[in-house]
Image 1 (tube, rainbow, N blue to C red):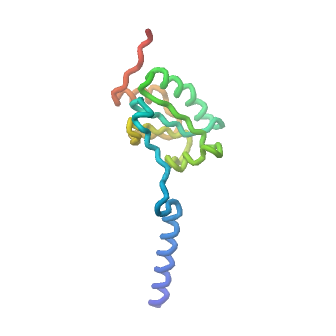
Image 2: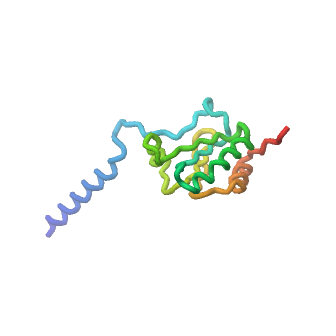
Image 3: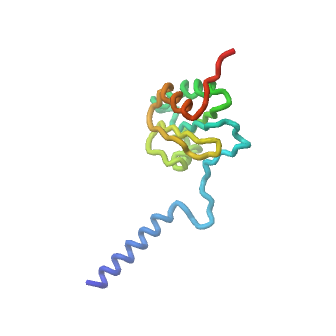
Length: 139
């Protein structure tokens, strides 16, 4: 009986070690979401993870364009189509559960906010203005 218990514990431990180590190997660099200040003068990076084939994602397209225009230079908008083979890895990198997902990063690449699903422009505006950003006035 004791022997069966010890074998069960050993097998469970081995399974957990293999399962937990599947994504990272010693010495292997993990993908980084850091945004370098020199490369990105924007105060906020707005990362949209979705697909051009997803209806709520398509509804986000004009909102993203409007945000980038309204906050001229203060917000950098990036869109990743996570259903495309060459961009699929961003879904795992950002740990998304559904699309669309919006991730907001500060000027150093640190995540400051995440939203899942369609995100109305007024709510994005409220968040950005709470971060100290101002809407560009037309001249």
